[in-house]
Length: 247
Image (tube, rainbow, N blue to C red):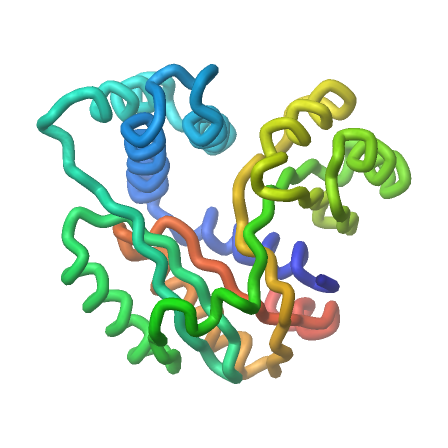
């Protein structure tokens, strides 16, 4: 997993710089609406909705927007979104998972395929790359929260499986079904996290050169700019030296 958190951090910063605020809020609202519709509109009874609201607040989404997204799930006039996972390959054979929410499957499939083709990628069949990833819970803390040993001890006590600490922050992973329990345990010791979410963690990684990395970032950015795409994950393995050339 070396370099995973650094790559994720660069993706996050790049996204914050490039993504129009309205588009970001739209994606967050969609996740809140779907989470509430699939479960319970009460965050206390719906872990997915609770995580979605927490992420929205961390992104400074107004309270009115959050409440509107929840109310939309209760009405019959709202869009009926379905969740779809696309899998494919980027430059140098890097595996890519694209998570989307759409009210038009054909439109989204066509658009995602076009983005892959235009940016040196190749959209594959469902199941073509998922075996290179594990579904995990991820809790992220800022580097100033504590040193690596302190965070590791807190993570072990909370029931987490793995920790990666660097100048970019502390990334703590656990089994997906344990995320709520682990996050609450960490919060009692470390305070509120920067992020608490489900992620696709690479179990098999692919190395890449500078040219390939630049092409991959263009592909990922293009996918993330699409309104139907919620998250993009890759299995790229990047050295610190290579990352320093793109920061």
